[in-house]
Image (cartoon, rainbow, N blue to C red):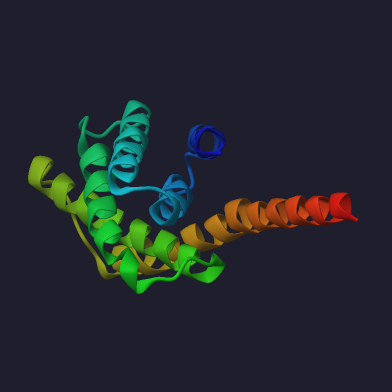
Amino acid sequence: MYLIFFFISTFFMIFLNNLKLIFYSPLLAISLFKQNFLFCIWLAILSGFTTDLFSSFPFGLHILSYTLAMFILYHLKRFFKENIINTTIVSILISIFYTLFFISFLFIFERSLKISFNWIITDLIIMPFFDGIYTLFLFLIPLSFLQFLKKRMLFLRKR
């Protein structure tokens, strides 16, 4: 399942790169509830590495940003129960933390960064909200529907 989600996220990242979405946030949010800490960190590293391959920013910034965001949120997951709404919220939080870390590292390495009120509104409020919508409609609802169909098929087989 994770490999399929990884390829879907990579496909969207490559072909919809003009959107400012954090394409791996659904994958990381789902794995946060289902997998152990080490798996989540390796998945964050792989997601960052793939993003770095298709990015013009200094190599490693995405890896650090994804990994630190996942590190923090994995330790905060005890405050969330696993369901569709909380997974969407965690995806939004991954997007916010990722953006904060990425901008911090970009400021350290590039130093030509200008942060405006408009940037804060778009990148820290509006775009994470769209990341949550992306997570909900492209990953969580189809996954829930597949789980429903699987339970329904098992029920029909028992009859």
